[in-house]
Image (cartoon, rainbow, N blue to C red; front, top):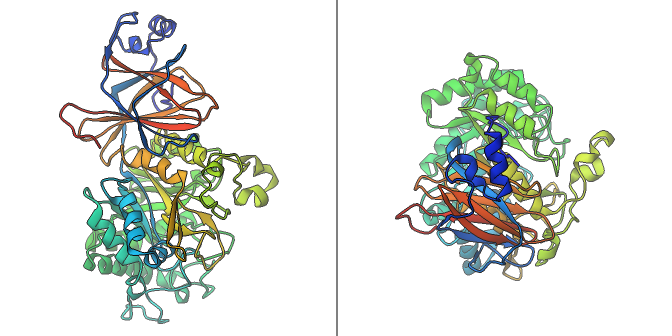
Length: 517
């Protein structure tokens, strides 16, 4: 099976048949003749599985009568990876502050420390969102066009301390993408937190609002790497903070006001467009954002979410967006197990086909097929691999920490996070989703380049990347109920191992002289 849809290059047919016949796919690259002889490849395997492995180092493997052959081709290079991570929300930060000092430090170390997931790409909200304790804005005074009363004081109790503490733990640092869910209501046509549009006479003030936020955070020692003009411009069903834009309206805001202001005052900050679900309608945004160089030049890339389908990661649409402008970012900025109350200390549920999302009940009848019951751990593994293999360079989960209800959330929009906290009992639960995320974020580092791979099993999913230090990370997802033997080939050498049933494995092939991650 080829998992490189963005590279239609043909291989020599006779060589392919020879390689498959002997179970040695390296022969496809001309690295070995058709022979089973090989030199051992130095590699380490880390696995998260339904059977209980949690980012566990695996050193003993079950012998197999049949092996899946995987060949890694470091000469085939695709997008550079920006990073992986989760979101600093007021809900998460508030919960951490209610935990005891030991558990608060434990969670932050697990996400940002050298012993943990080493998150490298994160997100936060500009003003309030559904995962806030209530509605708030940094510019509450109506008619204050110069934003003389602008203040980020609301963030100084919870969000800012969480980010600062994460910065202290992160050896390599991390990038932050920030997004407003809405402008201050007085700038909108409906004067409300929910729905409505930004009035054209306030486009300039709204751009200033975002710039003031960037400067205020920078003064706190928190540089923001990128922003989006608004979260989910198509709306969210009028359930919590939102503000609607058409592609043309967003282009107008970005090209005439936000882009010029940031290019003059904060040129290091990236501007990402869209910031909503990848689905068929995303094509209109891709076409509008990149219609011509004059418009495209203001955008550094596109932000996307996963909520349009629990089993479909829309590979065709991802490739369409990536291939339109291959040099720009395509970043998954939000994903979570939505419309579910977390299951507490029940790993089995996260590996079972029991979860449902908003669309299971509410999607239009013609789209319900995209929203069946699903396995949460599978959904994360499948989506991240599928995104990487189709041009996505960054993948951000939603809340890092939620409580046992799936909040706090002023809109009662309950969701699941990789870490669940019980402040009253001062307990934390690291769900399997945490370990799934870490399988990518810990071993595929910023600046890594996705590389080519070929394999001969239609049930597995695989991606591979070469890190800046020369090490190679190969991630293998096995959703099947049976263990599988793997024969991994790279550079004329092979490494044989097994992957458990219902498991995600990361194979780390160190470069000479590199230190184990």
